[in-house]
Image (tube, rainbow, N blue to C red; front, side):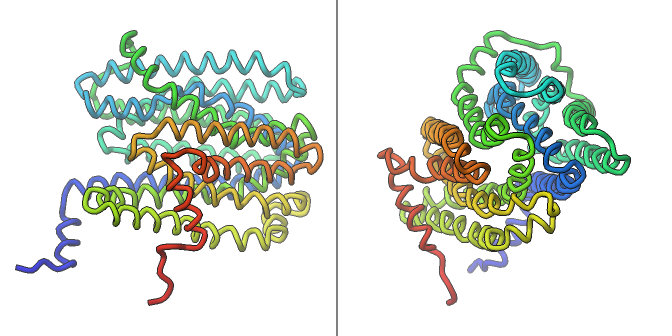
Length: 441
């Protein structure tokens, strides 16, 4: 008896497990899309109200704290999900241990921040803003609840909690613009964001009625978790460096207003970075299945993924780059007109973000996570060095160049110098010629 494609699709849709995963993923994608949408449009409204200088102070404070947030997270999220899936009977021990490790990580991160901050050129008010935002790192410990729901394929509840937090944050920012509030109130929203999300996460977890984990801690489990996650800590710190070090260096070498102008361009540029993540997460299971069936088909599908990443980036980045001046003045106003040249360059970082996202999934499938760490470190070091070298001569345009080159090193060039990743380098180069993508019939 023949089986039609339609019948296979109907069976797949009817499969309860598949429906569950699709439903779970759809909630995560919807929440992420709305977060990006609100972040762009509410962020633009706030930036126009504050003006480049105050927006620069605000963006600098956020960027400075971001450099230390990876330390507070300890890279535990993926490890915790794995442990909860493999050993569900030890749920409270794993959650409690991870929670208190994150609390200690947050305190440690704040101590390091406190040590480094006096070495910067920040004035007393800016330092106060940084401390306010940094205090919210402690509340990130409650994100262990997210790992629990991921392990149960129940991310709907976490998405609801995050949407509540997003709505509250957006309403507060719009209200403060309406009443002409001072900058400190927008800074306080960042702290409220962390606190409200923590409360929402603990509330949705309590509705599951599965027990209390806050009183549980096991030192042997903690030691095992830290041994497993240290490469992830370094990787996440490196990512934070080459994502936000540009704004910190701009502040130190030029000033607050330039940070505000640069951050405005970066917000437009980075708004699209979630698309490669969604595409990769959606397509990579099929690519892995091809690896089992036919190695040649596996390579073909991987090539198509890289080529699709390049094509998507060109479709998004080319018009933004060509009309960058007009886009910036339309969205932010004439006060941010100097962000146009920055956006024209910065938007092309998305090309290497996309290629890096796809190849990171490949590295994970091949159990080459340590190479991912080295790639990220190389990008972070490059971005930091180039920012220091270029900004004094080319200003914020130099920072945009440094960012693009940093992403290019991590997402493309590094692969050429490692024998295990060299085939990926040539596949990515072929992707620039859209190899594997059929045009027309």
